[in-house]
Length: 494
Ligand code: GBE
Image (cartoon, rainbow, N blue to C red; front, side):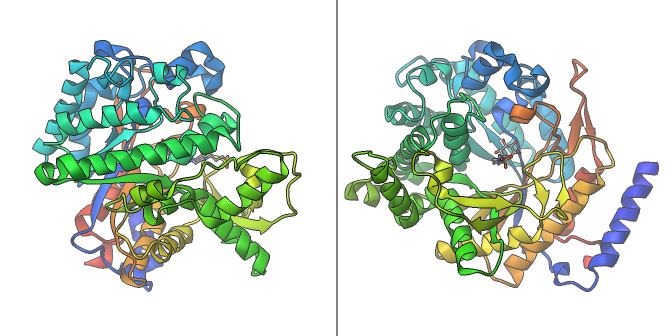
């Protein structure tokens, strides 16, 4: 009862404070709302039904202190077993589509091209997909959300160009086995995090720290793998299956810390080193010129015989260019940028190749994640930038959301969604940006990588102390439901 009152009061206040703003505008009828999760973060069942080991299983089992409180994803939300309940929660919310990822190691326990298929893994994802469709929820599938099969990591992982063959083999199986049901495919989730954090800073599994080298090699392999899978779908599956393929790229918004030319240049450089690192090859065919120039120059001064940034041949450029059916963006926050003196030439790293100072405004509201400040206007700016930079493509927001420390009256999350969605609707209605989907992260509180279960992003809380992994609805779930059914952000809208 108390909860309900609080919720109503919140909605009332929201109504008041927005009554004069343009955000009363509705989302267009074709606009779709989804929620997202990822296999390692929610599934559990880490060795169930023949699943092989992946890099997150490996690092959390061999080096438990890698994650806060020695948490791991062995059981997580147990969604591997409780997927029907998850689907029921989404149906109850009125969700249009579910963005989830497939665990490569469930499909191919050895990961390797030509290695045996695990039918029980396929069955699981067919069951989940069918359950979604039976409940009127569209499946949106991410093929890879950071959980590289361990045997492939032991062959070098993503910096090894041979990964392309393995990934294409895996992707073909997914198209063959699930393509009759799945029409929306994402090849990779946030390759920047796989590459920079996995092989550059060590922040994510497998935890290598060879920045300025392995991260660029990793990105190169991923871009080529993505392009090959896109062409494979185009040539062998699209006609029959009629689906769409893209790649999810993450970036916060980079706002110049001042009006000075140099700070403005720093902001654009940061955007190009982040979204552009992946977006530019896929959309325009090659790495952003500023990356080619800066990494080339610094490599030369450092005594490298060629640039640390791998080069695409003209043939590869023509092949990679245009391998997208939509532009997908994960975005949560904003940073200011400042120009700084050139980094010491002895420093070989992505960060010194980029060479921009990032900072935040202390008045920006904090979340439970150090990197996530609440800056709603950043969303409007970044989708406008994408639209301009990449010739007005169709844009999907594939992740956006807020972390807190828990609690069912998650007022801050309601405000986050209200204010980010308000900026999004302004971008669509007032600025004419072609955004057609919005995906909230996340359906459930889940395994938040290095932070374990301490940073909570869900519409449902999960009791990680109970073997049932009981789900309980938060106030924000009702708020999001309401947005979906009314297509607007306030009560007074219709
Ligand atoms: C996404 O990544 C992931 O796709 C999803 O798996 C995850 O659960 C969700 O967001 C919430 O985190 O020096 O502290 O600023 C910043 C989000 C590290 C994008 C963390 C890198 C967020 C980009 C380092 N960020 N990440 S620092």
